Image (tube, rainbow, N blue to C red; front, side, top):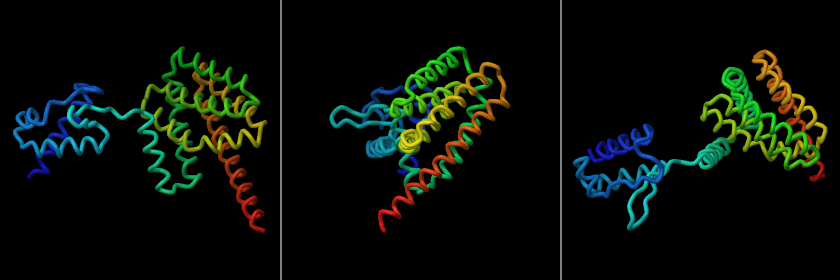
Length: 237
């Protein structure tokens, strides 16, 4: 019965957070007031707060009370990355998911991109042009480009997922850019095609550019892994 009671409180608080009735930083009523409101014991309220804290939706400050805590994007991304890492997903699986996401983004971006989105993409593209030869800066702007593409959709969940999978592969992307400097030129040609396709609302050409971009990335990642495996074998000899 106790479990059912605290679950009711958790459900109610989660619903209010989703609706925006409870915003980040809002102090929740004291245990006594919550117990009176829900007609339960203070132990039930404590259990509800504990569950909310485990979900990352409440922070409990000893002597001060419980506060609503909306998980930040970087925290969500970090937890998702950790879950994928623990699941031991291989690179091919990760790239397959990224391709599915990028294709979904491409279709929505064609329909939803605003003039501001296009302007942002062009600014990032220009920064990438200036960063050719600077592996660290180029790699970061490459990631920014794909996040901005996701923002074109107006779908925050897609932005979150694209950001997550970019973060998973960013170290290997940096390694690729370091080992194969010429890949920046091809990547930029594909980025330019994407911007042009969005401007012209040409879904077919957009999909071609995205598919080419991800397929090339997959091939390059495989080459990199093969090279690293061979080096590892050679080091053992």
